[in-house]
Image (cartoon, rainbow, N blue to C red; front, side, top):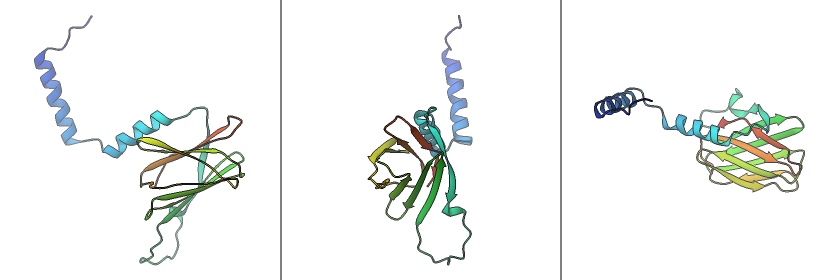
Length: 152
């Protein structure tokens, strides 16, 4: 059996912790992202991998371009998930192929937003801020597909 730490030991540990926090603090975004990833990970979901990201394109768009939409695509088996995020409005629009009525979850730092697709597989979320996100779709038969996390 170990002895409980005495007051001096607690004081020293507190000073060490404070020194570490001040000299090399963990960025809050990293902590939030790690917590969210652990809380919402689903080991039984099929992982949809990123197959397209408009930020990877090298185009000759003018420096003064006002385009603020980012488009990403994911694939898992027969499923394709396309997302478009408009940073200026915070709207995240998506479409799932093959089209079906599905439950859709948007996992963000600190929570989950839920909606359903229409008959064409379309869905949207408002007020989506830049940061880590993942999409989970659930089919009626219990099949679940989750995108990898991306930073918007």
